Length: 99
Image: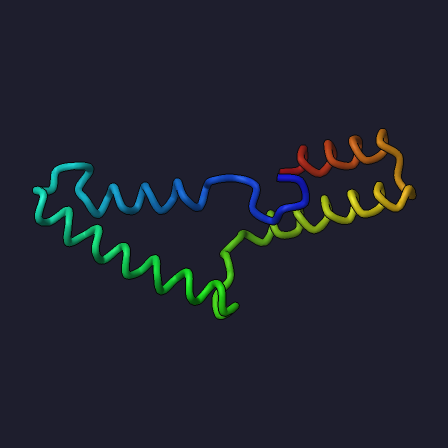
């Protein structure tokens, strides 16, 4: 997931956890489960449309937004040959240690 803003499946895991909680952790009867899944399908369609239109953004904590921008800055410097591989790794290690 090199140079991608979303590198994990945490968004999916969060959605799954919320859905599981709404479903009372598997204790719904079939008809209630079908209703719940239908509501979720409707919400997913709406969210996809909003994301593709640029009307909503992915929520991310400020410290991780900062960390990501610094990582991209280090990689850009490395790509431009103004930062060595050794300096890149040291900078990334220092940045991640702060988190």
